[in-house]
Image (tube, rainbow, N blue to C red):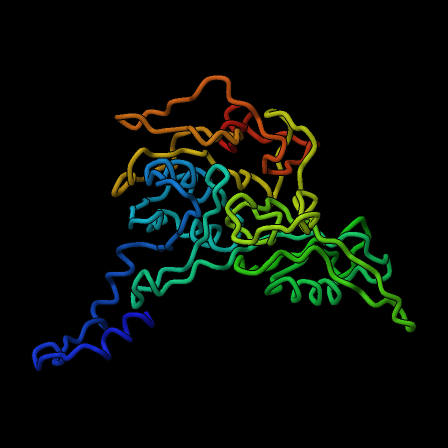
Length: 330
């Protein structure tokens, strides 16, 4: 928008051009008819299919009625939620990934042009490790969360305390900034320094050189000098132990955050909806595609990457409804 304003200052507008047209402030019922909406941007190098997004995300966000997805170009999409609760989950939960590509969501604002919308913030759960047992409480968790991003909530007992291996903190994080590998705590009256490492749940691909989400070290502008080592590693990412498809479900993690890595050969469908069908894949292979007619083609001999980001499903219980319910979760 700054470039546009600069261009307008240099232009000599005619009287007709300067006259202008007043818009907005129209029928408020129009927004209600459209339904709850949000704008999403997929951080992918290749075009993504609107149809694939609608089917995969509709299954998670609005499992009964699905979502509508319209391609706005350059991997920007307009999502219309056919269930009111779907928008809350899409914006408040996450992070959401389409294959290995991060989906950044922003609330729909009819007064803004697409270029004005910011796709910089994602909600994410962070584990603060190696905490002093006596300092594992909501106050400390909020202080740590505020250093990482905007503190949202923390899992704790009713009295605000936690005793365990880590604090589990939810923050809204700016993906333009390098990941925080940890925080330094000064403990006790003496202020003894203690390093508290961070582990991020469902952390998308990030650069091991600069620590920023959205690209890998192969695409990074920063080039390491001789004998210089990368400051980031996959140790920041929560990687669950090997889990089978039939093992368990969870409350907060139900459905997972990694969705089908479908791709389109072109810019995708202009308007698609999904939610009642489609199966979720936990493969990292980026070559799932939509063939003509919307059918899914599965490449042969797909290998699983050890760095795959999957949902840490609890292994202690099984979802209701047997196999059908298990398939619905994925």
